[in-house]
Image (cartoon, rainbow, N blue to C red; front, side):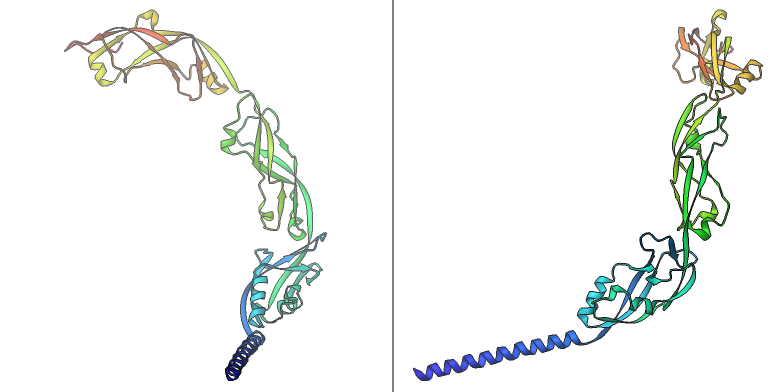
Length: 349
């Protein structure tokens, strides 16, 4: 019995020693793995910014970009590299006066030196080995602000008075070297063809959403024009005139097949529409008054099924000028439809 107890105790001791050895081995391996150094390459976005309240702006390149992409080579443990990769997924901000120069002008920045001192690497336990590209040319300029008047452009519109823009001025904000380069004091806000179609003669109309045209000198991602759209109040002169025509002759229109089958006869006393008022542009009305344009009334029967006997049809008033309005108390015309016998000459009316 005593011997059995001794053997059990010895077995437990051996198992404990084995478990301890395994645990220590894992701990040593984990520690060594964590402390072993390796390198990684990361693509990082740098953003050039100004601290709150600053009147300076920074950019790089001919496209006036306020951010650029660089490649970092960093060294550290695997765990530290993983933490660095997660943190550097977000853009890294380089501030004017803290990494970027605080004076107006152009300067070449050593990115490796600037980034090594950047707070983004605090407590990451990694070393910045290299940066590609190693330098970047940064332009620093003062932010300038000016105003310009807005001119509403209404091509081919007969205005009663000059259009009113609301607001009447816009604010232009951007680098001083760009904003103050040209002496531009007025910006156009054109009325499109679709917007002009909504205007009516003799009325005053508010047209919202007119885009302010940015001149070529200010078409730059660093320049802002606010507001970008304005509202215009546009008054058109009343160019609509009216003319009363005592009588308009009525004509009959038949298809070739109908002309071989039917005659449409109109009594002399019914051959006119009486007291027709025509309204439209002043020039068109003047042409009608002078006899240079005719107004006619037509019975358009070519698409109708005709039958012999008396009938009544409605005349359609037309002119050579589109857009005219006609008012007449009675457009109906009584007629007599007569079948044409074979060999009898056709007479439409």
